[in-house]
Length: 467
Figure (cartoon, rainbow, N blue to C red):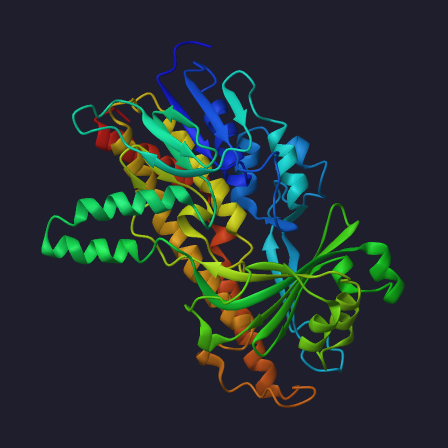
């Protein structure tokens, strides 16, 4: 490997961090002039959660990076070149015992691919470049130290929980919702803002955004073998098509993964009045089946069958960040949940991390990005990615309200009846479906390559290069 123009430390080897390492290496492959150190707190590659959905924007990134062939071995990928609509999700009102068909079919051009999250990560990890990228496990970042103002080009020092340190020219914080990188970044940015009265107000806001806040929802998660569900109902729709079983302040998402061998189930329960409070208790813990079944008494049979198959559900507090005003500072930058942890109601958390990684890599690999220009280059990344990701974060929250009949625009829906089959109710349900899709269609009507072109154009404008 040639002498690197700079070295990059990526802290966090989840989907966002690994994708960033791959993208940086492949987009700078001609010169191979960037050295990457990938640090992970765990002893090996590991991913929490079970399922991940892939819309066209992140899947186009997989294709651009040459990763689609290996990933296609894990899923029947429907995102092909043709653009005809495919059934992606079915919405159904399920908080009654009477079975009802879906009231809204979500049709998406090119469809959606679903993966087992751990399999997805391991496939990506197998594509890391051994020449440019070094892996380091059992390395949990606790803080970092910037060089003194008198020596701005000196390395950043990384401080790990085991007492060791390392250095880098660029730090990419991909360390998740409880990001130590974010904690230090916002604190340093707040310290700088403290110099004036107006700045002190900004500093107070920044410090108040360090920690995630409870969304007011929890989720019971589990993965079901298809054979187990099939014994209860050979025609269960979740074995074929992603389902959203909706009710007041609750909804259940179920969809096939691992080429249909498994069904991923996420059952949400919400207390809207507790949104933006602090969750009391463990954020993840095992719970019993009886507790889960009690939450959905009286719901339709397909929901009962799914829950009966979940022998050891885990309960997750759904925490999120408020929209951050910054995602970079000096030569440090945030990606994925570290920058914009969101509720999962648009299935786009992993996709946003992948998009972050791709735009960031495009900027870092650009010839105009040098050690001296890194702070300005990272502000270009922030200008392109942070407003988009914060908007997705907002839209995801809104979709969660729609799925649980908590959106005040549709307060006229009669939730007390057994069938809710009046023409007025059906019209309201259809409007809810329309609102959810309208809020979500950015995922399949916009192109990540357009964002990449905007990023490169802005980089060249700000750093004085020619287009």
